[in-house]
Image (tube, rainbow, N blue to C red; front, top):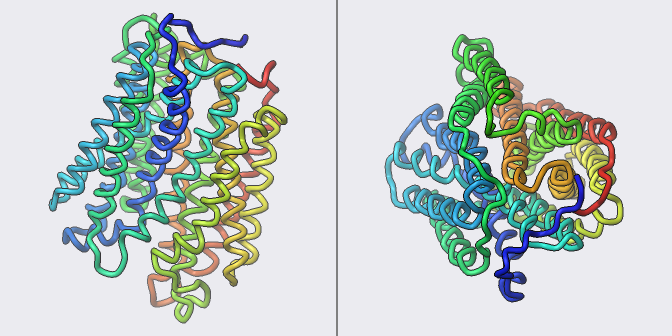
Length: 475
């Protein structure tokens, strides 16, 4: 694609608003990632305090994931067509309502509804990228996208740390949702003050038929991934959902090829750099959850029973083992703009993948002491932060400005599917490979998990090598 300058609406953006916009969007994206991971460490406590079983409480995670899959492409395209600011503000209002509902309720159905509303937050990242492309000059755009994307990777680690600080001993799990409500309100007010209004550059109706087909296909596929461990991987519901999802997604792609105003232009999906970027996003999303989940379970394992682990609490897990990586990840995100301009997105992604492979290999081979685990997880966090920074920069040079929101929405969905795959894999490994007579996972389960992480990062490296460089490092 040729260089695209921000559209001139004649109104201009004040320098004060311009200075606030990037920090506010960065906080917004960090909050999105935190909402994904903050609930994971307390899912057992939610079940205990609401007096519901493991299968039922699992829907607190599953419902959020399904809502994200359904809403992200629709909201991303709606932002392209109707304007980024009103859609972004609307999403923040919905997410705030979801957080408040989850914080107030004492019943599982309403908690699940709150998590469904929070699922709309996944669309905030692609819309944020689209806003940056509209508002910033070319010389600032790559650096801003790098920072925004990197914070998406950092936010996951920060969420685990915050959960450890908020919920410990016998405290109420609702503290997590009160925290997200407070942060959500701050972000909403800041966004209303700093995100400029600009007419949309795209036109045409929203493809509701395509949106419905995509939603059904993704829901079926993600149901198979998220519930397969409970249903049984070869059970009829799991296989039916997986096959049904693939068939519906195939039908969706065929429909989009003939649609006058497709939700996702098929030629965009099949363009080699965009296809590789989306496949790489799937792998990076998988690596993210392999790192977080495997590390959390490993360090919390009782050494006397398992023969490994550090008997860490949720607070210690976040503050000791994940916080250093989150801090270094923030630094990496802040530096990503210069790295992207100097080495181009492809070069940064290659370096990030190499670092990811090294981090996972170190974790697999040396996890019997605190220091190697911290170093390994820090390397993985930097890999995630830099990879997340590079991927949008690879995409936006290949798509028209009017398709920025939907293009990055598809990339976000790819990351979500990858996270679901790795979450299902880790859950299965930790359930199957246990110490005899206990429910404690065997050490081999973690070695396999970290080896999978190294393999995923290596495959992302291979895919990246296949991608051609864009004609220009900025857009």
